[in-house]
Image (cartoon, one colour):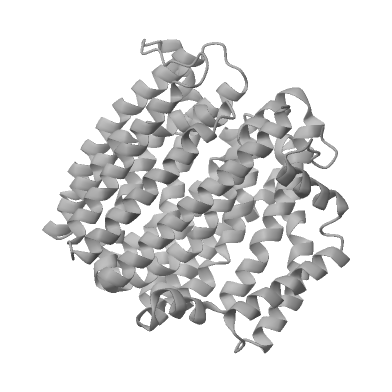
Length: 486
């Protein structure tokens, strides 16, 4: 099996894994939202919004660097991974200490503080992400993806049992810690099946300096990405209360459910992207161009359809009590276009070793998000927060125009924008159809809309025979051609 065939197999496994995990999180959120109600789910959401900042301080981008260096066949892999794990554990202690100290100065209730104290313990198991990076770099995702799915189904069953027995929110937060611990222990166990892999826990200051130096830009990015993604929830909780946050979080969950697609795609292609950058710039270029194309084709019609059918979607999934979340959903879904394409952009830039040049985008986006939320939430409530997210997500990619003057990333930025043109044009007739016949049966409406969109993709040659051949070869696990890349 050649490298591209391995990528195809891993792509399929990762996609299936992420679909199942996405189903798990959607199922959990639906169950908890219906069980806890807007007020209770708002309390649950603020705990994990706060925790996201703790995890951002901790992550430091270490797993991405390990993935890249392992994919490039680093000779000191075991020592590299061992030092990365030790560094992660050290940062965990600092992050949890900072979390527990900071929460003392925030005006949260004793109940919320207790939940935050408890949830922060899951941070100690975050070094599992380093093992995941190793699995992916070795194209051995099957070793952890299948057990991970099994673990989540077991926990889904436990959640259902807790709901039936009417347990309090405390036990659902406790369960999240047990899930993190179970995953990390599973990663450690199955990593033994990777030939020649055994972390060496010997402090090497040269390696630590390399990891910290390489990951510092990613650390800065992760902090501001966390700000960009979760500051709206914290501000909503502080300004409007837990009920409004519960409604907003319900909309966020439906929006972020689509993230399983770019996450799976990037996780699967990042090792190949790193390898191609080192071996062949032509293959590297062709790979990210195709990646932009496919991500645009997928997410743009989703944005149109969700925006036009937000009330029906919210009512179907959460019930009529959450219809007030539909306005936020119809705005938030457009942010996903930038999420999809930015994931490919970041994938290519990091593979090229240019992560330092990415720092300014999330910083500006995060600062813009805070400012807009402070202005818009008091005036427009949760819809104002959604508008702030859309502008800040979209504002950062617009800065890619500046990359035209930076030689290394010039072409990547251009392809970012080019990839959206044809899918947007093809989605317009579909949107007109949805708007005109919005009262149709929802399932029939979605199927017919998909047919219309596909038709225009074909006649505009946004999708060609080469793309069908590529998809068929992935399914059949035959020799793969990515836009002529062999």
